[in-house]
Length: 149
Picture (tube, rainbow, N blue to C red):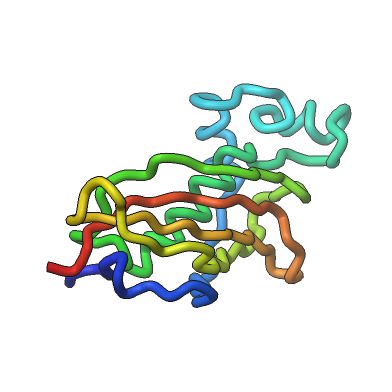
């Protein structure tokens, strides 16, 4: 399977991923490695002293997981080159174990590179929603893709 080239994307086009969930063990394991704060790693602390009453996923994990859901659509298979950046990251609501998350991507920009004609840049606006249709995070992601040969 080959993904989509930068030439295949249209500004305003949207994609919605399947739903995916994180369990508490996965949340804790990620946080122990990358965001070792007690609201992410210690269920007793989170329940008794944390602001949300239980362990929540790290915002960094929420971003990575939501982008993984998008990658599963296959759009970048064989065409993705690099991800030069993210902007406007916002964590709006906590993500709990068992929440069913979906990612909705909107193409904000799809343009050829001015200096390298074999590639271009795709800027996506991403909304991450839970099973209650609440937005839990938003961000913009820039990806470098091959141009159609």
